[in-house]
Length: 490
Image 1 (tube, rainbow, N blue to C red):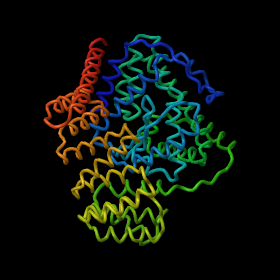
Image 2 (image 1 turned 60 degrees about the horizontal axis):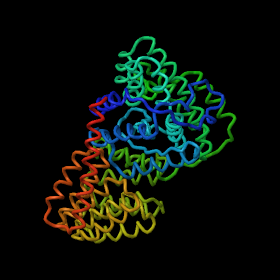
Image 3 (image 1 turned 120 degrees about the vertical axis):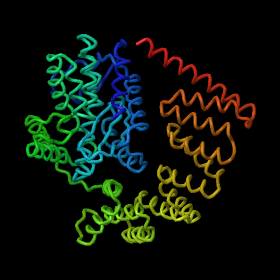
Image 4 (image 1 turned 135 degrees about the vertical axis):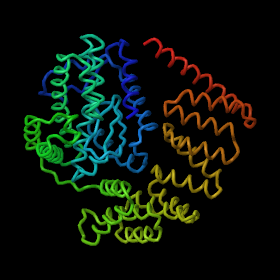
């Protein structure tokens, strides 16, 4: 995948830089673990770690075909991740979760709190606690500063060697093949050191992850059952083991350690959330051929072989939407209403099907009603703005986008809708300004500068608006020059 090569290049540019030590406190979470190095002497500041992760994720969003650009799936993963990370406030770390459409069972942590989850992993989880167990494990990789600690340890050797090890760990998170190729680039002794070190990291992530899972109110048995199932699968299909086993070494010692810790925890039966069931149904309904998905969900409903009737009907509705059978979608939405399943995902679907049929007034009415219950649900907001623009209500669309940007100024998609709204109103200067901010959030400074140069040439806008565009242009040009100079110096 193209983004992986860019990731390696980005790390290579940053490798020779020396940084001052920073403090780190959550060592208490790892009580009883082997000494993995003093986290207070990490040479990778949080700001730089976040910057590296942000650059990688921007590249994934822009160029990785498997990236799932779906606000509802992202909202669910981030809701689940927020519940887990809230259980470890001492970590002082923010997280962002995203999904990739990949049938393999895998997840990976990037620098700066970015965590990727393969769709195959979400579908393979038999309970929400199992999925939460994997996410808590990845969160632990971040809070325990595993990548930064590995890089700090390897910096004691030659720079080229520790860079190879750092690249290997990061690459292996998303591709075992790329990871193995990077490992070969290092010396044999260095490879063995890194492998031993990563096994210790896995043990630490297990233990911290179980603590997090329990604190967050999930069934800790979910983590153990998922890894046990992976282990059995790996023994049966040794040459085609799940990606998670290849990137997260699983040993009998790890399984035994998890089982012992789980036995010490209180039994807790936890019901899966509606969001978990609906997201799994959405992933199934939107992959492969629409007719195959329709057949699968119709069979589940006919034979009553489902974990959730609402999820099966929701999945069938989405598959019918893909097939363009709007009356069938309306029937399933009505059935979901009779089941009294409350979810913004169902409300979004009800409005989306009206919009798809060209009934914009009904769609807008449904979006407005749903936003009373879920005022800041992104899928509803994006759908409402889209319907407003399609209905010739550009001013209302602009008002909605601008109000939401005041609450979430880091939402690049909202800047895109704002730019479209300005374009519909014939406000070219403001259109280019909004498009520039979208590019800034995507890490495309050169494209942002180009948009602001177009804003300068726009014939509309008052003196104040032109002054704002000029000031922002000077700021971004300076940032772009600094960025280019930094790369040349490395």
